[in-house]
Image (cartoon, rainbow, N blue to C red; front, side, top):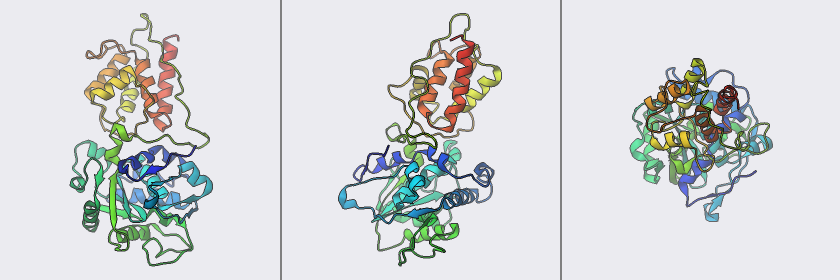
Length: 363
């Protein structure tokens, strides 16, 4: 099912098209990105690995310029991109932004007059920012949005190697020639990663296309109003509804809270620790009491689970329920977590824990 068009006036809403689950459409990676990200210049090397994977999909560059006079733009889902092997610059910027988010990088979509590309942190990851590291570009963004003046300042951070830029269309074939950065330096119609990085840097100072704005995808992914739209996944025509259609039954008095083994409890704490804003009361309430609609949250590895989350884990093993919320059937917590991340790789593992807890409760 195609996405609804993006309305240009709703700038921040563009971030909702960048669903990290898009990484499931990648061809087989040559190595695990997590093996690279901690290395010197590992953020750049992780991006290279992911770029090369999309390069191998043999996409074609659809030369459909961003038409701001029309007031809206259709953005292809990953299923459409990899199915038709066609993508515009905006399709590819959104796709790469989503994939880089999934693998802990910090991408920013930059829009100029008629083009889109990425700028990415070269020094920090999402996990490090979540632990309190301060980004060099932080002051350029207001609630995830940088104005044209802020975009111009990104070039200096690229020159200082705090950031790197990426011409996302470089991985897609075109025979078109020209003087624009995305037209130059192609070999066999496409760009190697090094040239794509160079072309991205050139875009930041290409006078024929004045900068418009930039979006910080990581920051916006933390905002409830900009959670990603559902996407079609490989082998699934449409995003499925939550696997469990109704609230699970609460465990009976004989089962107490001891529905998970100690090992399962620890794994649950680790998995729930990947949810953003886990220490917030809103997130805890969503886990404990559910949410009106399935909310799809992008995942952020937080390193260590918050104390409140560990308390949930203790309640799961029979060590007591969170005092702030009274009784906390662990089935409900897992069920609500699945609703939040349905369609992601995390959901499958949570479902295994849910099935185990439900089975032990005799439901």
